[in-house]
Image (cartoon, rainbow, N blue to C red; front, side, top):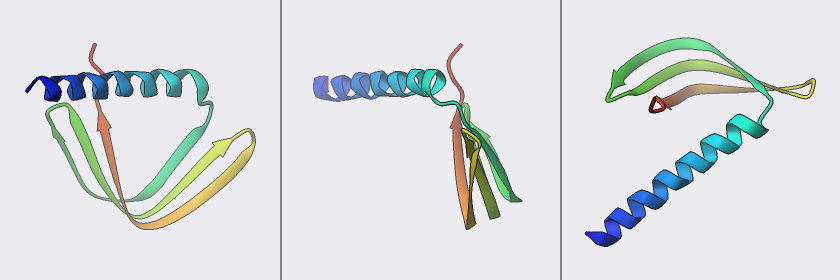
Length: 80
């Protein structure tokens, strides 16, 4: 059980470090277009299923577009 608590703590520290790095170092935009098939909200977690998706990423004036038949987006709310 103690090892499980250590792994949980390490995972939380990793999540915190990734969120901090993304908020400070990433200066890009993303646009997602498609047909929203399903969405749900449970336990402060949003899940979106998008069909026929077009994802455009912009960074430093350069744009890349990726097309996909299906995309799953999971977003977890930050604690306040």
